[in-house]
Each structure stands twice: as C-alpha cells, then as structure tokens.
Length: 311
Image (cartoon, rainbow, N blue to C red; front, side):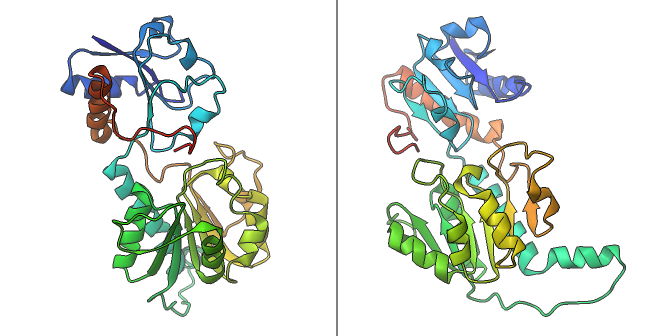
C-alpha cells in the first residue's frame, strides 16, 4: 500500500475526491491528512500551501507533488526537504480553461462589456465606436504550457502575439523574445500585456509602477501568474490616472483579497478570486500516479522542479 499525505490548503474537504480518483488507477493508494500523525509514514505528499516544517518531519518521504502548476507556495517553507524530488502538475485541461479565461476577460474589455452592462442598468440604449482589433499587439509573458496555449489561441483570433520568456522554446511557432531588453521593448510597444509567469526571485515585483507607465497610453493588463509579480499600488495609480484602460486580475498579493483593498473600489479593475484555472482530480490523477510509479521503480518522474530556477 502507498500512503499519500494530503493537504489542499484549506480544510481538506477534497481529500475524498482525490482518493476516489486514485483508487480508479490503483487500489493500493491510501490518503491521510498531512496534519494527521499517521502521515509521518507517508512516502508521497500531495500538497498545496502545506504547514511550514511539516514535510521535513516525514522521514519516509520520496516525492512531493504540488497540487497545481505553480510551486512557489513550497519555497515559503524554509525547512522544505530539497533532497526530495518535487513535481508540478502540467495539465492540458488547466491550460485550456485558463486560456478561455484570458480570452473572456480580454474580449469583454475590447468589446466594451463593462460600458454596456452599466448602460443596461440605466436602461440606456447607446453605443460606442467599435475598436479595430485586427493585428492588435499582445505580449504574453511566460510561454510554458499555459502561456503557449494562450498565445496560440490569440493568434487564431488574428492578434499579433509575441511571447516572452527566459529562454526560447524552439517548438513554438509564434514570435518569441527573451532578455531584459526585449522585455522593455514589449512593454513599450504592445497594447495588451498578459502575465502568466511562474513566481521566482527574478519575477517578483517585475511589473512596477515605472513599467506600467512605460506601457502605451490606454493599454490593458491581465494577470493570472501570481499577485506578488506586480506592484499593486503602482497598477492602481496607472489605472486611476488614466494611463492604463484597466486590468483583469485573478491573483493578488494577499488572498482572499481584503475587504479594505482599494482594488474593490476601482471599476476598471476586474477582480476574479483565483479561479482562472482550477485543479481537477479527474484530469491530473493519471500523471500523479505515473510519477508515483516512477519514483517507486527508481526512475525520474516527469515535470521535476529545479529548486534553483524555482520552477
């Protein structure tokens, strides 16, 4: 039997769903809450925001699996056992639904959804001139599994897309740029900016007030990466002064977003509660099982995280 220590970052109410999905593949899988003393015997940890120091207490641990595509939550634990392989989820379903979210918020902005909803409330039947979006320049920052899906779908809608990353991805067909100089050029020349980067030391506070002010006047910003990647006060100022037309945000420095946060009072900032793409046990359990089998047979699993690069 394989014992899996589980923690979903909340009340572990989803542990039954994950266990049932695992049993469809292997009847020898058993789940126990990470906070339970019995988890001390676990060989596998399937976690999201685990209690700090707890994973280091699991002396039989052989694999740590993040319950999402991001792994930045793990680096907050200074006692994280880095000698244990860590994997992240790479789920085509999550890439698909997050791409849908980006398209939804972007098209809603470009087709003046907020304006028409406000007019509906007043029963005013009036219109704005339609934007010309053909060939509109869009920069996608982060072109991994999710970012590449977003970029490809935007190209199908005839936007002029450029992806930015630390290194080029030869198999991707859309335009790509790398490096600090390219980042600055994309900031200054693109109308839409979409952040889908992993959170690392180099991407924290990447989008500062100065960066927002370098974007073309009227530009639009979308963030489904991590909240810590942006200067929230700088973004708010850029929107309130009219330099940016607005923003759509799915992630924030503090979640849930505090009631007193000024974003709530800014109508040009669309607020989503970290739901652009949610982990689905049904679509990711197979890759988790394959990783477990790989570890137990002495092989290296797919999607192993590099602690130095932090993704």
